[in-house]
Image (tube, rainbow, N blue to C red; front, side, top):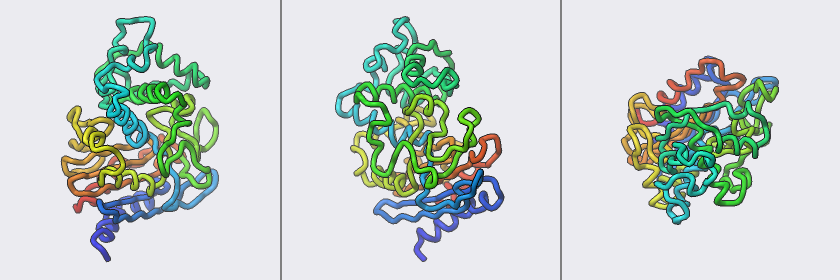
Length: 334
């Protein structure tokens, strides 16, 4: 038995316990080391209602906010490196119609870098989907709305606007942009981990995006990406070995913008999702559906924990925060 296999077995134990105790239906844990050693294991159910299906190592997951770091952030950073955008320029350099009826509006001063680092006054989230299902009209609403200004918080609005910028610059909707190898914007229902029994779509969601605003917008920069443990670990391996993005982009992903954030990613802080034992050179991110990815550049390893913790409802204490931290500590040898 290799050292990686032994380490993985210990790290898998909290996920196994969470499934056996009924706190989550199922999950997949995967680890990869710089150089290519990789291991993935699944447990539990991909769906329990209305019919039961087993979880598999190649089950597709709605990655939720991992979309921010796997899809949107790399593309924004690549455009900056190419000179197409300036990270310190306001969004209106690409979205001139943002709050176009008030040239003094604070929204017109928000920069790309501030959005990447969640350093804007936008609210954390807003029920945009409740204003209708016309995607073009909702885009106009988001751009023209007078947003309530608050203290900087982690905000989906930041990445919705970054997604709009990608659409303008590419001349395509986000769902028409290549999501990258191993990723997609939907999945076959019988091959995906089910998420919620949606109260406004009136069905259990599987293979279609869970995030309400992303669904109504028919694609958005903050959510909507689907992938498997293997595709996520391939992405992580590319950042570890430097083949998945340019050195400049990877450096920005690791460059702090605040005590908790880099360009797009989170960095270690007290009680963060990656546990207590990550090196300072770790970046990570989580997704509301129960997903997560962490990459430790000093230790040369990455791990992904994928669960369907909101199936069939989000209104249940799954213990996902504690589970993520426990796995992270064991991945790092606790």
